[in-house]
Image (tube, rainbow, N blue to C red; front, side, top):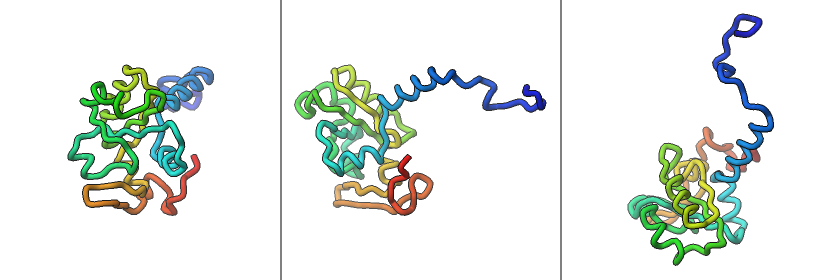
Length: 158
């Protein structure tokens, strides 16, 4: 309870010390990236970054990121070496925040010795941010969801 008698739900567990917080957030950034940063790298043609869609064939056909490699999680251990340069940094994605398929895929790549990051937000946020995606019928693009990105489509620059 504070001096005012107000009980804080936020501070019921005290915030970490600044050095601990800095280490935690630096570690998260080493393990994760977001859809906007992946899109920027793909547009720029940054070498050494390989985006991997770890979903099923049906999910891939429904929609995927242009330029991504389709490699379902169950096939990574068997096929990664033939499809992905071991010096590349792999960025895994799956459906979205409610799915941990990209996490499982990233773990498999890491165990194989690859540098890897998980794309937070997954395919869902790729589409919601208004980025083009490929389907079995061709290229598609939806309007920007203004709950995930500025309506202008210009990066939030966060």
